[in-house]
Length: 45
Image 1: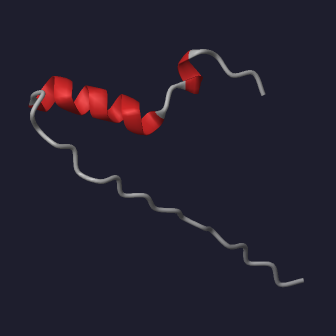
Image 2 (image 1 turned 30 degrees about the vertical axis):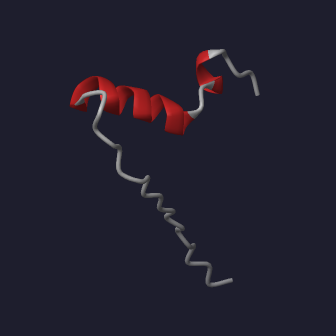
């Protein structure tokens, strides 16, 4: 895989920078919510 400099940014830190830019410097960002979706297959073999 070829990662660029932009891809190497810490996602939590980047989200906090964006949050504070929009909501204000003194606002606190809510904790992240993470989810995973797993799709199964219908193999009748």
